[in-house]
Length: 113
Length: 112
Image 1: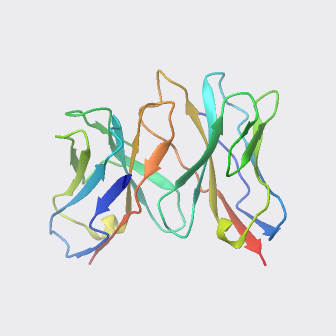
Image 2: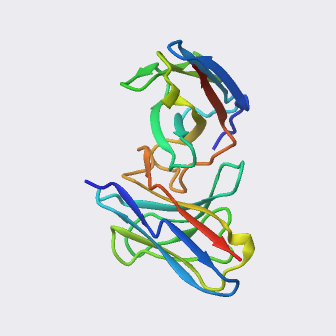
């Protein structure tokens, strides 16, 4: 799986949009971009994933650049409960990736009141 | 629908003791995983299983054994615990390689 690069920490004001960047310049054409978060040592929680197109669900939006070398996770209206470590992970699509997810150190997002 | 349940939540062992961590999922998932997380670090894969009766080594398998006798359960064993195995252990399950993983809330193990 391709490697990802994320800033170690970010701050965001409560109520504002939190934009978390991720660089994955060596991504292959058959690899998805996944985002998970981990709140205060709980188990990681799945947020969203995408292959080429932008994706949106009830939690967040995922914007993938046209060349797929980077992406941005957007939390539209951040709350204090969104304070967590956010992991950007690249994973091969079906046919591979049976050995799960490779976690880096992620971005520690701190929502300020 | 409980999702992924880990037992126990906390455990303290003395060096050399053995124990088994249980992971149970009720989502009929084929794939199951055991990870460990040390302070300030991301999760590292210990072992995984792609179906009942199968197991495979991950990134850090030494000192651990696993079994998947039933589809819904994945057991992680420590035969002779060492202080280096003090960690938080997370279990996860998934439907397939292109599906998200669902994680349990962890087992906090301290080996003295």
